[in-house]
Length: 415
Image (cartoon, rainbow, N blue to C red):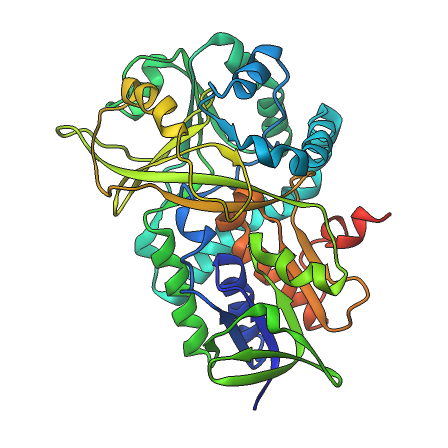
């Protein structure tokens, strides 16, 4: 039987970052996952380190937008009818959190994590020899109508208040940045303080290699076997049981499979999402990720090709894939950018773990000594992996945390 200081369950970007920061503080750490590290939800994102993020994506305000989703005509959302009874309470709470005062509260509470996101990634990339994956070219959001551009005015006002750099551009200014774009839009915002990575899976694996170089151990095992064994936590792995003083649940959309049987029931939902890689037509290319803001998709240049990501799908996490959003958005995407042939035959699908207030849970598990939680990062798992790792490692080792962790506590749902 192996004994460690800490066992981290889940080897996505969040769990890997936590394990690495704990190892950097001199703890003996086992990182446990039943799949390949970084191959779950962490693999399929748009690769953006969103240091500029201020406001979460709101529930649609306009009746026309709601009707397009309801009639399954929207490019940015899809749903399974059979799943609606399960997710409606969460959607109503999400809608309540879309009130502007709550979104501004989110901006203030989450700013320390987003502000530290790129510096923490850069520090880890230097240590892990992974700076080749970093692209500090910001990202571009384009708006097809003046109405849509005007609706983001509050976000730009907040950016001014926080001192976040951006350029509000007309169509010609945006095309000067990305000449391959066609003039299917009227305005754009260039967020200069963001960065992106060219291979999210390779980045997670680089952090994993740094973790093992510091003495960390990676094991295959089922997190659902976690249980108390005396005064320690025990998890079964292919190499035998591992006991640890402390355990961290960083299982993303699978966290509920472990926690709910323990009596920890937090209001998590999943937003499924898809991506496909395409070759560009001719000599076209992109320097940075581009978001078609009204239609809810992103085209991001990756080592594998141009990654086209979809919006959200509300469905059971384990239901068969239904990538119908590509049928709706591909004509629009091709009108904006010269996408060529598909690189792979079938889309990738993953599930984003989301709380209705759009904030993750980072901190102690209520009523479970030695158990820590780090999940629910929604669209920002890649962005916030290292900042979550640093914050939780500081909390677990008794160091003054770099920011107040209170807003991210699980107890916010029971107060």
